[in-house]
Length: 374
Image (cartoon, rainbow, N blue to C red; front, side):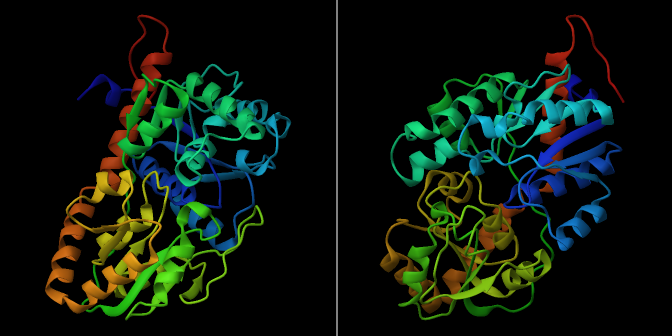
């Protein structure tokens, strides 16, 4: 066993939010850490979790501490984040954390604490802007890019969920010698026996990057109903109106997974996706994948999906018709996706993250120091 895996923290403080995929990522990871005897304090920012989310957290066994700190993309300038470093340092000190796992790079900017820091970049405004708007970040958002850059430099390890997103981070922030790829994961229940003639998609549809308008337009020409699960309105006031697809709304995880087990096709039209957890869950549930042709999806699902240009509703509708009319090919594609999904296990994610924690602890330790905190 490597030295990095031998060195383990006893107590990890991890940040999260209740708005997007970081919630699921943090809870799954916390469950794995708790199973390894590592205590986890989840420290939340932004809109508070609902009762269902709090119950999910309690079931994991991790402690949850919600703050009044904002998410970086919901404030207008650096002053809005002024309290973040001191607040996080105080909570970590009071809880006697051994390591900080911060799921927003900006949270590490200006952080003054003598602890190893792991920063995870799940997405950021700068890489989002380049992919969605095709341009550099506007000057009035440059403060956030600077904050992220400081946070990335502060970290002993920078985690990204895909090689493609890592390349995007480097393109914006420059070389990242401490960057490591640890793929996201999903614990997917067994596949249902039968499939329904339905196209399912899931996402935060108010986010331009999810490209929901394209799929809604494709639904007008689809031979099968298109169901879009997820929020249509976001905390920033953005909203998507659906004219052709059926809106399923925000669903509890078990209800969304039930739909995934039923759906014959899962579509993801995203223009920007650092990983795409919903795609993984759908693949593991036996759906054939219809994905936007973007680098991340090509990296993760090559030869196990149909890829179409993200800006062409007609291409999505035609691909749906092709899959609907060719059951053997659809079944074969679904089986290839299911096998590929089997590589993205929670155990593999946990092992990669523990290795990153050990690396961070080694880099933080004084010269000549070695051993474990456990």
